[in-house]
Image (cartoon, rainbow, N blue to C red):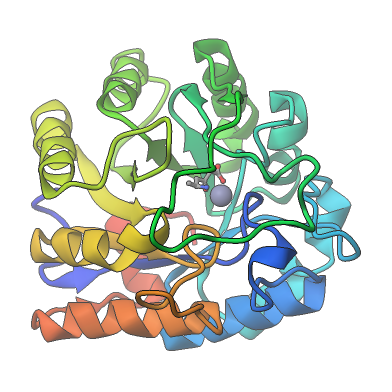
Length: 307
Ligand SMILES: C[C@H](N)CC(=O)CC(=O)O
Ligand SMILES: [Zn+2]
């Protein structure tokens, strides 16, 4: 992806907590500002060059998209690591785009996520089943259907672009399906986004593309055709597919996203005890392939971040 990417340097992004997984799903999910800061810094020490951040209500663990909630851990993270900060504009699927973009608008991070299309979001525990979740490892998606649309209309995307653009913030373009690559190409044609594009391909979320190696190859092939050397490819696999998708990407010279936002596991039926544990597993894959993990400054160069 992108002949210009420093050969063999793979960027690891760590998505520390997210908004979808709930405290009852794993005792290791960071919830409080201290837990989020500690986990983020440890993930960076393990090799994450970019930290994708959401905030939560420390009491309930529910998503909190107020700038004040982010202010409770951002300074500590910036003090504790040189990793690039990536603030979510996805928030949770229940939020309006005006609320979702506020922290990125306020803190003007080097990176912010940008979801490139609306999708049906297969979830059920967000609302009223915080206390009752029981994960069935054998049939992961069986109970995960709830009639939710994660709205990211063309106007929503334009609104976030317009709000963040003059801050020098670059985007992690979250593409949950092939159509989202074409949406990104549409905004590129209109000159509303500038290369190199960090394309974060999302695999395995109910409502988006699957996790079959053909799905991964199809996303990459399509991105290559649409963006040539104007993009830097990264992938995330939801849940059980996380490391398998990571390995396929690294083998193709692509970048990797891990973290408890995307998966609670560190292998079959084994809860990850920390974000750093998943970063170490990703590092082993990369180094096992004879490649190197990019440092934060190498990631800044590869992605043309403002630093
Ligand atoms: C699958 C991930 N939860 C996508 C995500 O990280 C969205 C965002 O924060 O903008
Ligand atoms: Zn996120």
